[in-house]
Image (cartoon, helix red, strand yellow):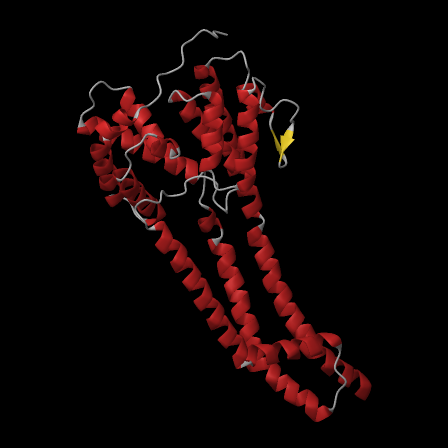
Length: 340
C-alpha cells in the first residue's frame, strides 16, 4: 500500500465560519420540509452551528462534519451547492438512523394485540369475576389456587389506589421527559446522533466507525480521531474503549491487537481497517465499509427479533383467556363432580 500518501489538510475554523450562515440556513430550510424527530434534530443542529466559532465544535457532530467535507470538494460553493450537500447528508443520516423498517412500525401490531389482551383482562376482572366470586361465596366452595389468583387480581384492578399510583407514575415520567427535553432545547447543546439507548451494540459500532472515517477524511490524526469519535458517542463503554485505543495508536501500536470480540461483537473487520501499513484514505474507506456491513447486519437482526413478537402476543392473548376460563370454572366443575 502507499504509505507515503500525504494526509488531508485538517479542516480549519476559518473554513467553518466562511460557510456557517449558509449551512445554518440550509439546515433550517431542510428541517421545515420534514416532520417528527428528524426535523427537531435538524433545527437543534442549526441552532447549535449558529453559535459555533471553532472547528472543534463541528468535529463531534458527524452530520456537520460530512457537510463541510462535501463543501471542501467544491470550489467556491454557491447556496445551491450547499443545499445539495446538506440534503445528501440528511438523506444518508436518515438511512443510517433508521436502517430498514422503523422499530415502532414493527411493534404497532403487537402493541395493539397486547392492548386488546389487557382490556380483555380488565373487563373480565370488572364484570365477570365479581359475579363468580359472589356465587362461590354463596355455595361455600373451597377455591383452587388459580381461582384465588384471578379473584385477587380482580380486587387489585378494582382498587382505586392502582389508578392513583398509575397517575402519579405518569406524572413523574412526564416531568422527567420535560426536564430532559428542556435541557436539550438549549441552543448551545448539540443533538445526540450516536449511541442512543435503544441502539444495539452493532449499531453503535457502525456509527462510531462512520464518524471515525469522516474524522480521518478531515485530516485529524488517527489517535485524535479515535478519541473524538469516542467522546461523541452516548455509550460509556465506547468512550472508555476509545480512550484506550487512542493511547495505543499514539504509542504506535495496533488498537485492536489481541482483541477478537468486544461486548459480544467480532472486531476482525475493525482490526483490518486499522492496518498500520494502510494510508489514511484506505483506512477511511475501510471504516465506511465496516459501518455499512454493521448497519446491514443490525437491520436483519432487528427484523428477525421483531418477527417473533406478533405470534408471541397472539399466544399471550390466548393464554389470558384460557387462564380466566379455567380459573372460574374449576370450582364449578368440582361442585358438579361432588353432586354426581
